[in-house]
Length: 383
Image 1 (cartoon, rainbow, N blue to C red):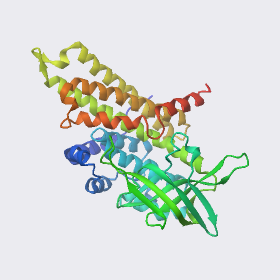
Image 2 (cartoon, rainbow, N blue to C red):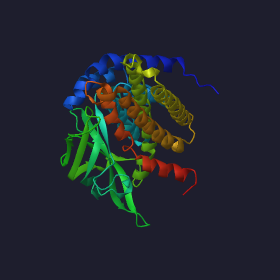
Image 3 (cartoon, rainbow, N blue to C red):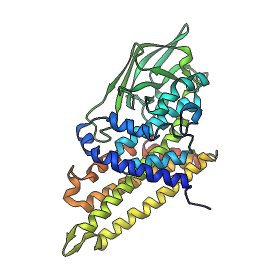
Image 4 (cartoon, rainbow, N blue to C red):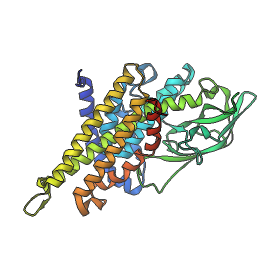
């Protein structure tokens, strides 16, 4: 068993880490405070190739393996969750469905701009009454001649309402199956299509510098060729997309935990109480030891899941495990980090406060921790 990264992966990690430290860390706190999506840092992330990382070069991608993409996401998340969310959603949820399920014409049309970072694309799954129960989607698409007419809404959609958002992949009810269950299909809807509106959401606790949207479809008419893959395959496509997305959420949890650990270690070695650094007190040293141990375990689990994916082996169970474990490891690391900072950990001038808020979405987005446990229990044959 070889646990070493390739030279290319090590170079990638170092370059993305340096980029995050130099370009994102100086502005992350202000962007979070003002709840602003930064087109400047978005352009810089695109310039260093953080979009379309696993897409072949013929479509404008970087042609890297999935683990390399996960390492890059991890390093961005080590500094800021909002920017990591833009990268993770841009790749796994925006680019992924079109690359894996689109026909050649759709790939040629959309992927080059998405891979260059010139444009972003949303993943329209969640609805006000269809979260964990994604198959309960109420958005409808009715065939009229050569068009689909779409009505409904989506909520909590990342990257869908920026000024460079080019469209969204929306899960729609397109009929009823023979067993009486809804027929679900994915349809590509471009920004600017009459009847489609994306509204930016504000007042978030976390990822305040990422773009989150509500989507509305009112007699929104799109050509029949905008269907993604075969009719009725939408739920399968969404679930396959979420498998990959869970790895990127795992990367965000891992990177965020690493950031919390490093901030806590640095502060506890500098903060002096009772005549010595607080890191020297066993109660604090044990917190740091637990953080280091859990991060190492989380990294091994996440990287194994990526290895399975890169080697075309089943990885759904491991993806769910990695998403669940990494997100909960960040919760514990963020909690310890704030505790070690004491009162300062509650102040916005310390980045650990932002990490503490940002963590919570990892236990909710792309399948809650409860849903991950349900997925795992089914895959091990328990239910």
